[in-house]
Length: 128
Ligand SMILES: [Zn+2]
Image 1: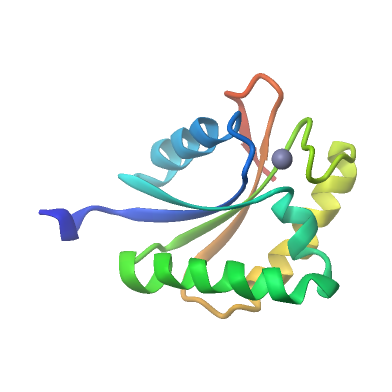
Image 2: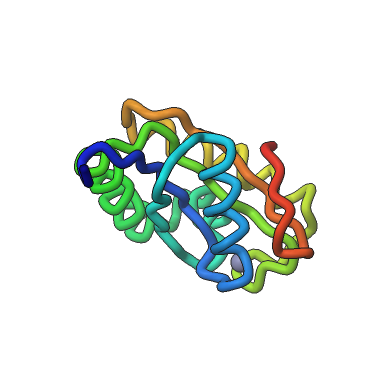
């Protein structure tokens, strides 16, 4: 039955190269059937920047649909190699991910928040 299917949520970059990599990682490691994608260009940078309050609220509303309507228990935040929306090195993007984690935990949803790095082979994803 459809309502028994398991969902996770990913706040992912809009970049088409990372969609499958993130979806596959979440399906494999969290046993979910579907991954709701909330996409922005460089979402780790946006979520790390308090001046982006309007976009952050828009992200929060979409994550809420995934958590409350689909029952997602995991929310991933993604940074990736070669990001046009956040054109910085991995080290700086991980700092953004750490700050983004604080922001997303602040949404207060009953779900685990994880941080992911998607590499430039467009297949490898690691948990930060
Ligand atoms: Zn990107």
